[in-house]
Length: 384
Image (cartoon, rainbow, N blue to C red; front, top):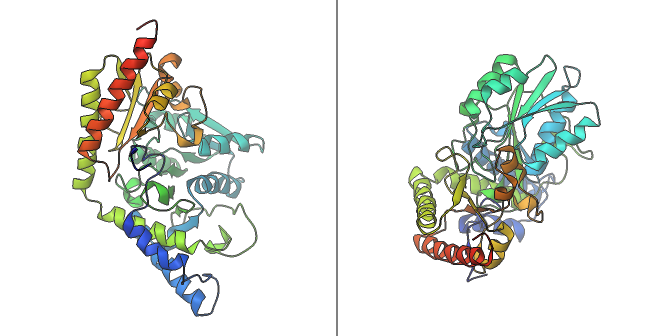
């Protein structure tokens, strides 16, 4: 793998050296349970408190509004299921979009068997949700809406602030799967207007298996999905993952220091890659919004080339066909289908996810390799 160029940072990111350094003592000598009252436990609780503060600093909220989870999928489930159960006497209606992550869609589908109803709003050709459509979908029984901050496949940024204004106007709780946006875009919860937001460490150069759910103060508390302890105010019981929590806190602190200059550098690399591919190849199509998109996201369709064949041909480049949670699927991405991309073209989509550690030299190498493989595969196709 040392010879492979990694450009799949939307699937996961490498652990930053600073994060690993912060975690190491709590993987070795400082192994206490944060619920214990002896010195080992007290030391563990202290670093958990510190990490909660670090997460809150990035999100512009108070530490009391942060609940630690095992990751974004659990946070999404806790937000959707937990709020649905907590607000059941008020109503049973949820609003989301057809382009959400499966952690949202599958949870809403499962709730249907329990009497809940979900409206799945369409997205425009860029993958954005219309605030007007959101407002039109609200009923007296609507208790929650959930729209991702930025799409994990095509990188499009939703008009979160405008949607939040609609939600507040009608007194509907607003949750966002903010996994891709946190640490990349404006992450202040007050500015975004969110009531609940999911995040995970491994998308921001932290460890896997640890995440958090932001729950705004005075917001309805979600019902717990688990039983067995009083940790995390009883919302998420279970022994705390102290090393992971330390890693999440360190990753958040690092993200807060990640300047606009750093983000601009990734945008430049992404645009350079796009320009090089567009200059050397015909019939490639950009998926997602051309401007309102994640800094490192480049999702392209290479007409005439099946994405899985292209990935197999790229021996020294790590990219993906879309969501890492759906990487075994050979059907067209549900996100691209929701955006109206023809099925045949959607099957040619490849997602490049550039990150902090990519270089200009790597962009040149990847561009050359992609051009070579695409031309070879097109030469084998009859229509080319």
